[in-house]
Structure formats: C-alpha cells, structure tokens
Image 1: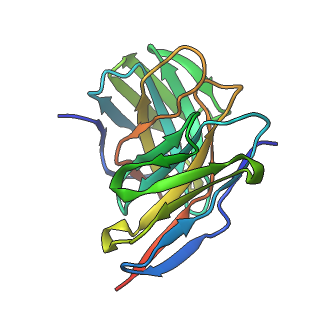
Image 2: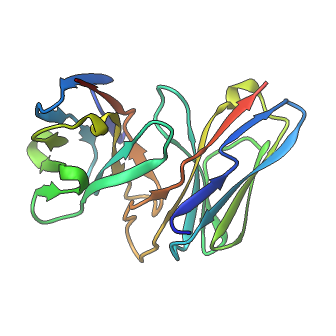
Length: 114
Length: 116
C-alpha cells in the first residue's frame, strides 16, 4: 500500500542550528513529492515540490529537499533555523490513480529553542 | 482579497444544529477541496470539486454535504454532527492540469469546529 512516513513526531533544535526533517514513502513509481508547512492557527503552505529533474530542490524560506530514489526519501533541510520556523511540517506524495488525492504524512512538529 | 478565505474561523454547534462552512478563492483555480484535520492524524480528503463537478467523495458521512455553486465558492453544510466530528476543516484550491495530479494546493486558514 502507498504510504508516507515521517518518523519524528517532534523535533527540537536551537535557533541558528541546522535542521533535517525526514520523509520516507512507499510508492510504485516515481512520485510527485511535496513539503507543506503549517504555522499555528494557519492553513498549510507549500514549501517546495519535486516533479522530475534535479533531485535537489529549493523552496521558500530557505528550505531545500533532496529526492533519493534508492532510499525512497525526500528529506527537508535548512542550514540555519529561525524562531519563525516553529511550525508543523507535512510531507506528501501525489497518487497516480487520482488526479486530486495526495498521500499525507502525519507531520513533524518543529520546536525552536532560543 | 487574494488567496483562499474561510468563514467562520471558529464554530461551536450542538448535535442538532445545522450550520455551513464557506470557502472562497480568488486565485482563478478550477479545483476546490475540503479536508479534515484531526490531532495526530494525517489530513483526510473529504470532497473535491473540479469545474463545479464533484470528482472525489471519500466515504464521508451524509451529515456532511458539500456544495460548489461556482468555481470560486465552496460550502460544507453540516447537520446532526457528532462530537468526533470536532476538527479543523480546511479548504484548498488548485490549478487544474490535464494528466497527473500536480498536488499544488493552496489552503485557507481553516474553520475550527467544535461539536458539543
């Protein structure tokens, strides 16, 4: 069955430290891959996406993600986090059997220590 | 206004009430979605409309009734809900393209629903 796993429910990092959020997927073909962010009390916002081509993709707010086919992973990274990055981050995969459905991870909540 | 706007932001209702959630998008998109977000669970897709036609209905109980009068507006009518329906209801829109799902969703801020 197709699935998306975000193994970390919570991650705490110090402001200014680097960040990596993990995402693994189970999928039969080359997927479309996404990271969304949800700040407290807000809806979700698209951070970045991978459709094809260069496996290192740049997104908004200084985030990047790397698609590794051999590991079925699409980890999100940022070299130096800011307090405003405290939010919940969701990884998602585009499903081939639906034009509209995404498979969502359960999310990782990022906590920033001052 | 730009983006996706949802009203009300907060709603408290009893189990016998009838209420509606409203969503409006100003992005020129042709597809609109209702999602349910509950704590510690992945986002649940409820309904999708494309060009005002319902294209996805994920086994949602009939006490939730969507309506899409035009490509800019989407409603979720609520009737005789249960306490377990308390959640954040998110509206989203996306640009349509032929072929595969691009997955580029633009979300509203959500309507926080509490059912007493």
